[in-house]
Length: 360
Image 1 (cartoon, rainbow, N blue to C red):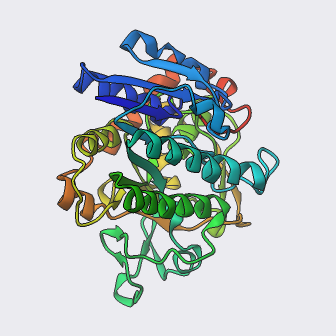
Image 2: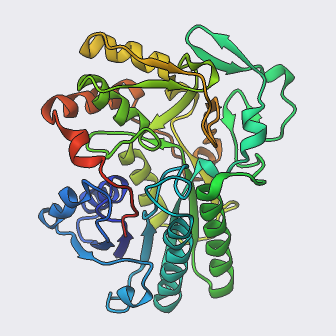
């Protein structure tokens, strides 16, 4: 089996590539990356795993012309921040070119090669307004929705499911990924290409290029240990906002199942995330950091940022039903892995926080 991975030098792309080679040693894994994200050059050592990487940019259709045909493409390339396109690190046009036009070029490659396509999408395709208006109560050190009063389709104590609204606004980032999902499914139906779409929650693990907008668990632990300034932003500035997390190796295990199944399933779009059992507020994360690294002052900033939401936990029941998938790595193990990495790499944030870009 030949697998082509875009964004192969990114945190997720490199983890998937290594895992595929580990489980399918006879597979041929190759990929492309534009190395625009600071830190991604550290993952060019994939040759040690028998993985071939090339420098290129999927925004340029010609960059894909010389790649051999593949059986599958895993699209792990993106500008991954919900604030992308609205800040100083990338323009709105760059965001659309990276996350949407680049996907079109990859889908054209799939059409020519008749390759299956696996898109790594995001929880940020879900509508912001109803999420930001969920009735919440404070339970200990976190927000908890008052589910008995919630009448929205797609929200339950298990989290946000695939039935939840994707109506605008979802952020420019979310819109580019939602449009990519639609195009991928249409290419699949039109050209007979197997297509799977994975709406990923927060991914976390050692070696992640974390920032305050993306990779928050990794960023928080590294910044805490390095005694860098940290802030609880929005929602009263108390750190009660909640996210769930899972490990890229668990995502890779799902991708492996999908690579080996081109038959049509009842659903081609699945949430993939840690779920309620692997969720944590920033305040709870700070408590964990205090126990591991010692105390550190966190500032309070009650002013809310564009697109922020107070509670987002994905319900991955569909992935469990269709693919017999669930995350294996507990959040405690993931945090310990990041902490170990932080202690071994004391200047990690300086090496990986400069700039923001798409891998591939």
